[in-house]
Image 1: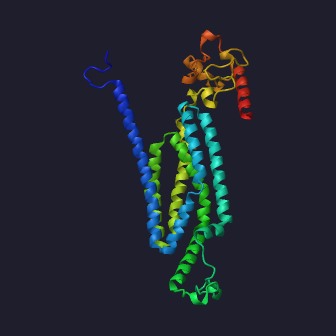
Image 2: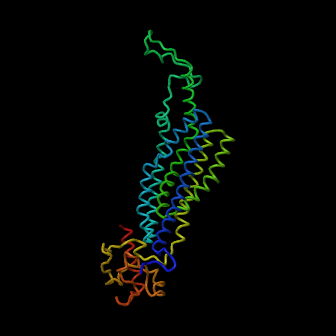
Image 3: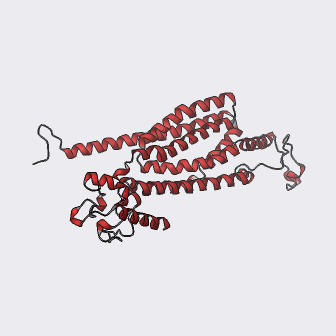
Length: 359
């Protein structure tokens, strides 16, 4: 009567709770691995850029600040994917989830395209915000222009030493380094937008182990060899950032492929009702009941199940129901009258689907 099995001091409820806690810690450890891989790549970039000189380090800092340019908008799309996608997956509303994925993909890619165009068109203006190169220095040898000190009084003449010459040359060198990396950096904004968007979708589907494996493969198998090779052979900031671009390209391809190609294979369409596939129709009300369809009562309404599930329903004696739609009768329930003819369900189903698509 206490709920504890004989010979054991642990109840089934306690075992379930323990399993849930263990699963929680496994998921948390997977996300910790992700964070470590991501931060390690950023640290490695900074170390390589620092060893390339002060000009390269300054250019690297500018690129790093602008690298997350689209995240301020796309992170909102990722949050939408997590908040709306999780209930859809929990309710097996795979049709709705596919629509959500398509919409967020288009929106995220659009943000990336706009950001890339802005960076390409306004390159010099953006760079000038971070590195205001003094135009009083000659581009070739850094000599001063005589008019540079015209605003000073004769009694307050200040001799400009060689440190200012070196500072001007370092700034111009940093600008040239930025120019060499700018096109790659700008085009990667589209890839980054998809990466940030699909991060939210991966969390919505609870693909924590996949995220961990994706980062391990990308960081150890792709980013590290590319960084070491590029830094050793080219010794340029462009080669360093090519490694980072390769890592994010891998993340983009892996995430998009997993959400759109791999994950749907685990969804069994024969167990998905019409409500869970396309969401509640016009006849669905908040208390879980449904209005009468065009064909009469519950079983005659074409809003409840897809005709493609009719063979499975006949074999099993009725279609499975979602928990939130359990009050609605199935086709195989004889208490509500005979099952509708397949042609009737097909006609009403197409009519309902056309209505939802028009909306």
